[in-house]
Amino acid sequence: MKRIIDFITNSRVWRSFFRHGWPDNPLDRSLVMTTNVFFHLHSVKVSRKSLSAKYSLGLGLISAIAFGVLSITGLLLMFYYAPTVERAYGYITILQTQVPFGQLLRNMHRWGAHLMVIAVVLHMARVFYTGAYKPPREFNWVVGVVLLILTLGASFTGYLLPWDQLAYWAITVGTSVAGYEPIMGSVIKSILLGGPEVGQEALTRFYALHVMLIPGAILLITSLHMWRVRKDGGLAAQDAAVHDAEELAEAVEEQSND
Amino acid sequence: MTENTKNPEAFSEDASKTKTYSLVELVKAPTTMVDKGPDDTIFSFPVVAIMELLLTLVVTVLLLMMSLFVNAPLEEIANPNTTTDPAKAPWYFMGLQEMLEHGHPTLMAVAMPTIMVLFVIAIPYIDNSRLGSGVWFTSKRGKRITLYTAIYILVVMPLYIYIDTTFPLRELLRGQMPDFLLQSVIPALIMGVIVILPLLVLIRSKPTSREVVMTLFTVLFVSAVVFTLAGFLFRGPGFELYWPWDMPGNYSPWDNL
Image (cartoon, rainbow over all chains, first blue to last red; front, top):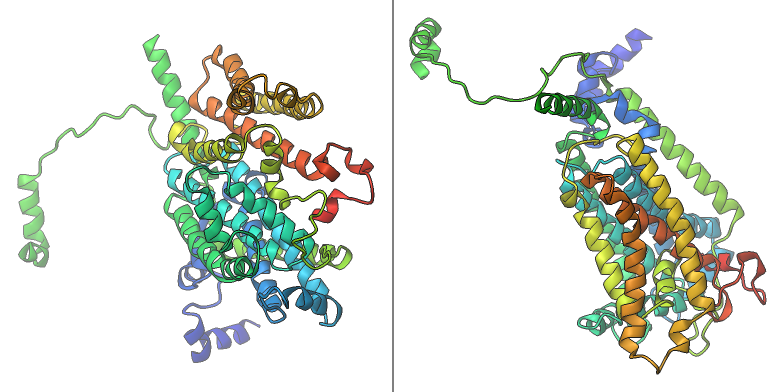
């Protein structure tokens, strides 16, 4: 077994793919993380505390997983869709009744979208209650708020696409709220809808926002979000040691003041 | 410099002659390693990779299972001439739509959400102490503050929604008072009092900025949940309040998902 592994991991083909050997030793385990585009999001070593499910509840990752599921199912849904008032609804019924696994695909996209909104909101609450927004992570908190707003935008723009009564009136009600804003309200509303009410222009715009602009922005800003997590010193869970030290310092100071 | 590196002996001799020491700063802190072992770290590979893969599988399988049993809703084709009753925004905006029932749109749909978003963005700049970073609720006291604030909001907000809907003073007094006072000033004052009240209780025990922010965020977060649930589950035809299981006609709030 050892000889087979050695043979494979020393071959020129393996070495051209992965610039490291079989990861059963500290060096190769480090190289896995630093030479792989996906793994390099993580540091080579992580503190045990930041892996605790009780601490992070895995909510950030669940949001990212939901985004991944939505990207894949969304891409597949695009094969059976056209963003026109005449054809959108028809495509949805065809998808549900004639396309193999079409209904399942749409279900996963729908429930995945709700899951992502819930996960992102809970992730924010988790970060708040664990005090993980504190310095030096202030800016990453702001980035996170932007991502929350983008997530709501992605879900909202997707809501219109089936072009049924539910979609139409939800977007009508939802965008009428924008119209209440006294200064820019009517401008924002007409930019969003491309007209006085929900129609073909709105469907075109929502489609472009939903499949391209907002997911693209989420992908880009999520990269920034994760990069900042690394640059700001990983999850705040490992700050607990620092926290103890500061508390001790304060206690010492108070005593010397007395 | 290049000469020195070529000849290390000359370099060290030179350095020993010129090296001086200066006191840069005095730091008031315990020595870094007192009472602390080395940082408790492990290699990310393969543990993190496996954990992430597992979570991905679990989430995807759960989504798949749900999708097998529950179908996404699809109503008739959109018809601008027939309004659905009730006409509801997507569930995550139902808190906003519910707020619209309780005051002037500019206050409820513009001013309040703007204040909320700005507050959330400002949190790390209001509370910029590092104390308690990475610790759930910071302390036992923080946990108690969060719990009591949550219970307080869970009682007050549903009551407010219920009273404002069933005894619509704002409707009864319409015409007797200026609209601006009735629809904007008074609701804003009521909301303000609801938010300030727990802070007044807290202020007597000299709270840290973290505890103040924790109270405000809990007010915001639990209120958002209450308003969203009220709008999504408890509003039926005519946008009236009903029990979710006792909706008139064959309307079910879950169909709006």
